[in-house]
Each structure stands twice: as structure tokens, then as C-alpha cells.
Length: 593
Image 1 (tube, rainbow, N blue to C red):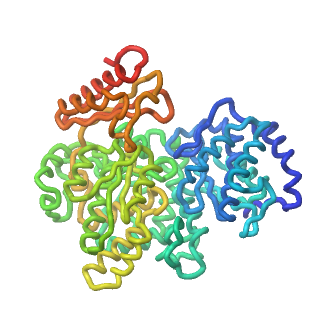
Image 2: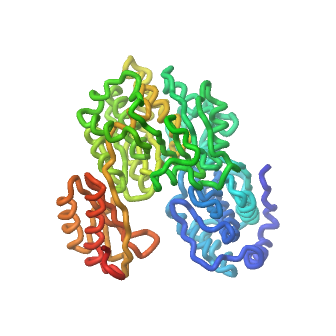
Image 3: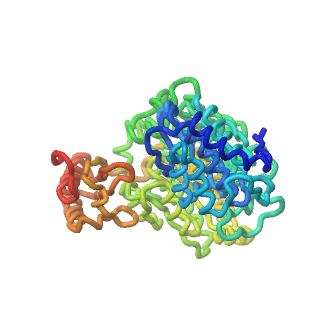
């Protein structure tokens, strides 16, 4: 049950207690914590004060939005089990507004005897009372708290609840949920109306088409995914899928989802308690280490979640006997480069990462939009770290590609510029977005004649299947399975869409990372002046070469990325780019060799 806030009459007397508790029970750690895309993350044993304080900040954020629900997710995602973290889910179910990220950092780092002053500063800037101001909703804030399976997550979530209640907010425990599920719960609690949804007000989520989910358990989350999946499959059979749950909360979500499906064919592995969270398994392990997870079944199509189930990558052990699909004319779809992809792909463990998911999804969306025929803008949004072969493949299929700054919040923001968009990071975090204008056009087209109405309905179904606020591993798993089934493909055919270019990433220490300036999408160096011409010359000398450098957002290093036709060429290009950057941008220590 929700923790009830103290009465308004009592709140005015709590400020001295608040400061006393912060100093006595939840002392600030002796290190600076910065709120980023992932919220706060660190060793769990130093985060007591951070959780306590973020409960208070979430209450203020809710109050600033008239008492709408704000979420707090207790997770450190793919980090080791000894770590934990907390991030705020904004009222629309998306990530915390960037203007409030600095508030989070300031409150988390305020000295113990300055906590009240930091909270008062936030309240004053946002036009709020620190305590005692009820909203139109009849409460001084509403906070929904979810958590992952780490042993310390329950205790830490109670500290966040304590902080929220102390400043007058209602705090409710959502229990064990995936991060995307909490985003969904917040979004639907706030914006699923009691009557049929109309065109949304500017800045509000578009809830048209979701009215039937009102009143269902979990705000209709599993029912929505299952129904959309069955409709998008449209009778096409799905091959079985082995799911690596990374010993995390995704296991509970997948088990509930499987119970909602008519024929799940899901084999769940690596549940909580069978091993340390994320160790030797999970999406981060597969994508970064380029290794299969613990217990992988060999030839069965497989996927791996991360620790809080907002990312997923696919993989399969391919052999010369693998069927490519169910009678598809693959040469027609992908042209003369198909044979090269197959010859290099057989007899190995193949990883289908976020770039491959984006290619699969964007290709389907592009086809359906062409049939609908409406003048809707569309793009696949990537970062500069997307493999060049993926970008080339998308463009060869006629899919417009936009490049955004590194980080999922930047991808999401860039994707909002289009009526319809697909975005994924290579690590498997991504989704597809539909603007209100796109929904209006597709709803109208769905009432027209075939085949236009059929394509519009498929796109509306895809909109229901994928999470419109954040990347969601559970929904992305169903999306991939449905699209593979519709094409009659197995993992080998999907992997053969294109062959990744070999790449190399490295970093070098510099005296001041601010000496390197880049374009907004980070693909071009603007300063030092001679750096980009030098990088261009190095890339031109390598077969299919591409490289870029960018300053780190967290440490005084410059990160280097290079790719080329062979691993040897990519390694050489990365080394030469690092040497050039070291000379022009004030590298520390010895020149890279």
C-alpha cells in the first residue's frame, strides 16, 4: 500500500528534522555524484543519502507537474551486482527532463547541513513550496518506486520512499519491475484518460488506441504487448527463442509475458539466484566482450537481456547446415552482397546487435509507409558509433539516416524530429516512435481501402508493440520475432543482411579534453583546426576507412573510433588517429605505439 504523507499541519515542523536526519542517518559520501542518462550509479554501500534525497526530489518534480506520478527506478542495469543506482522517470514516462538533471546533481551533492538549502533552492527556482503545498490532485506529490532483483534494492527503495513521504508526497512501491515497465506504469497512470483519448495537448503523450487497457493489471502492459504481437505475426509461425535473463528482473517480466502469449515458445535461462547478476551473461557481456552467454544452447536463435531489461541483443551459433529462412528470395531483398555475408557468417557465433535490430525494423517500417502513401517523414537515427556497414545498408534500402550525439537521450530527442522514426544503439537499447501527426494519418488510412488500410494497421500495431517512451527489451524481443516470422527468416538470414566492418575503439589521456570540439553529432572534429583534415587523410588511406574522435563526458580522455575493411586496417587506423590526436590535442605521457 502507498506510504501516506504526514498531514499538512505537521509539515512546517519537519524542516529541522529533515536536516538532522540527513546529518545523523544518511550522510553524503565523500565523492561527487553526477546525474546522467543512467541516473546515479555507484557502489550500493555509499548510496543511502542519494536514495533518501532523490525521494524528496521526485516529490518536488511531481508537485511541479501538478501532482502527476513520477517514477523512481532502483537499478544499476548491466553493472556488477555490488553496484546500484537510481533514476527518475518523468511524468510522461520518459527520462527526467534535462533541466532537472542539474537539480538532481545539486541535491545529491549538497553537504549534510546544506540539504534543506539545496531543496529550497530547487523549490524556489521552480515556484514551489518545499513542504506543505498540496496540488490540484490533493497531494503534495505522488512517487512510484520500482526495483530490480539486487539484494540491496529493497532496502534502498525504502529510503527513497522515506524521503518522498517526509516532504509530503505519497509513495507507492511498484515492487519488482523492469525499468521499461516502470516507465509504462508512470505514463499510463498519468495520461490514460477515463474516456476515449483525443488528440494530445502539446508536450503530452498520445494515448489514442490504448483506451481498452484502462483498469487492467499492470496498466495493461503485458496484455498490450501480447495482443500487438499476435496481431503483427498475423498467423506466421515463430521459431523457438532461448532467452538469457542475465540473472535479473527481466526473468520475472519474461515469465509474465510468456503467460500472456498463446504460443510463447520461449525458453528462459539464467534466472535470478542461479548466478551473479550480469556475470558471464547478459546483453552487455555479449555485445562488449563479443562472447556468448553462460548456458547458450548452440544452434537455437537466442537473445540476452541486460540487468534491468531495457536492452537486448540476439545471437546464434550458425553452421553450414543452417537454413536461411522459409523460401524467401533474399537476393531480391538485399542484392549482390548477400553471398559475402553468408560465406563469412557460417560456422561462427553470430551477434545481431542493436544495429541489426534497427535495420530489420526500419526496413519493415519503410515498406509499410510506402504502401500507406502518406507524406510522413521517416528516418533511422544512429550515433557515430553505429557500424558503417549498417548505415550503408540502410541507405542502400532507401531508408533516410540521421546521426545524433552519443547517448540514448540524444537519440530519442533527435528521433522526435520525424513523424516516424526507429532508433537503436549498438548495445541493443532502442525503440520506434510515432508522432501525433503520424497517428492521425495512420488512423485515417486504416479506415480506407486495402492494401493501404492493411499497411496502416500494421504500423499502428507496431506502435502498440514497442515502448513509446524508452527502449524496452521485452517489446523489442516480440518485435524481432514478429518481423522475422513475417519474412520467414531464421537467424542466419537476418545476420546475412550485411557484414559488420571490423572496428577498434581506444582512448588517450589529455591535459584538457575541452581542447577537442566536435560537431553536434560528434562525427566531425572542429578543433584543433588541423585535426579533422588529418583524420580525413588517414581514413582515405584505409580500405573502407572511417574514424572520429570525441572528448569523454566523464574523464580527461579523448575517445577514438576507427573501422575499415579488415581488422588489421582498423587497428592501424585507430593507432594513427590516436597519434594524431595526441600531438594536436595535448596528449599526456608517451605517444601511443
